[in-house]
Length: 310
Image (cartoon, rainbow, N blue to C red; front, top):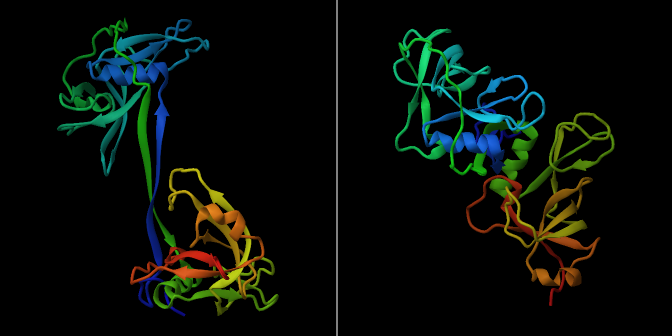
C-alpha cells in the first residue's frame, strides 16, 4: 500500500494547513475607550462605585453590576509574574493604583527581570492606535503614591476591532486516506475500503467499518458515477467558502459504494436547477483539466447530470 500523498514509503503522510477565522470584535464602551486612549498615551481603567476597585483594562460593569467610572492610571507598575516565549517576554504588571494585573510585553534590555521589578510604559510614536503601547521596560523609578484620576476626554471610542485567528495544524492522513488521495492525484481514480463482514464499500477510505467495527483491509475501486441523493442551491456567501455562489451542494452515492460523498453538481445553467436535477438521477465526475491535481476531492471539479441537457 502506498504511504500517502507526496511521501516516501517510510514517511508519514501529513496534510499541513492553516485554519483562518477572521471576525470583527465589537469592543463596547470600556474596551473601546481603552483602545482609543492609547493613542493619547493614556492607560484607562475602570473604578467600581461600590468597592473602589480599579480594573485594567476597564470593564463595562463594576462589582455591583453598575457601569463603573472610567479613570486614567499611571503608566508605571510592578511585575507580578513573567514568562519567556518564542515571541518575546510577557509579564503580568500591576499598574500603580490598580487592583488587577495587565498582561503585556517587556521590551528593551531586561536582564535581571524578576517579580517585583519596576517597569514603565514605552509608547510607539508611529504605531496605529491599538498598537500605541509598545510594551514596558525596566525602570529605576520608585513606587510613588498612585494618582488615579477620572478620565476627561472627547476621544471617540473604537467601536469595532477587526481580528483574525490563525491555527496552524498538521493532519495525519494515515494509510487509507493517504492511498485514496494518492490515487486521486496520480490516477484520477476513486478508491474505498471494503468491509469483510457486511461487504460495504466505504468512501472516504477508512480503517474500520462504521457498522461492523471490524478492520477493512481491502482497497477497491469505486466508479466516478453515482446517484444524486440530495442537493441544495447555495446563494449565501460565508467565511471559508471554496466556491463563489451560486453553486449546488450535493450528496452523492457513488456506484459500488455504501456511503454518501459530499460534493458539487454543475455544468449547466444554475437557473435551470429545478428543471434539470431530481433526486435519484445519475451523475458523473468532471475532473479538472491539466496537471493541477493536488490529491484532494477538489481534483473533481464537479459532478454533472448524465443525459441530454438540451
